[in-house]
Length: 242
Image (tube, rainbow, N blue to C red):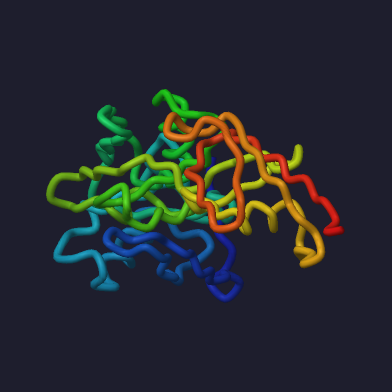
């Protein structure tokens, strides 16, 4: 079958946002609507943002796809999906949670969101906790969920180590789910989660259960602080001052 292209004056140019290795954001590449992945790779190398390499050493991937895009593939057929360009065919991700670690081999275009979901399914985690992946240390800032793992993989070894940690905790306050980022809550913070604004003419009685081993259950008064655990239950009862 013969493929017929429209005259050059009818061709449209498009801007394709592409994730590049070593860069967290996207870089816009302008090319023709009928150009192929190979042309895109050539233009990416010409930007000078992927180091000293040949276009044959740049591979393209659709976001969260398990496959590499073929060189003859038209860029327009990606239907607006975000693309990732990288020197690596795969990224070897070591995920660490507590004293356990697992290795997962993925394409550079896989999002941190998809990796987080995989980690939650493959580690013994509390489903009431909200987990995030951190780079370098469990205490680091969590990575953006829509970022691509290839943005953090070096060309030299195509490897990344990430830490799965609970950055948000789901608790129950007066029967309602609340998600908090703190590991500890004070008496007044708990009261405000139940009643906001707080009435100065009201006395609030706070009790809790299903806490961590250090404080599985108990009560709180003004000035107290309690350590949280996922699924912890608080009850706050108001009483008018006489």
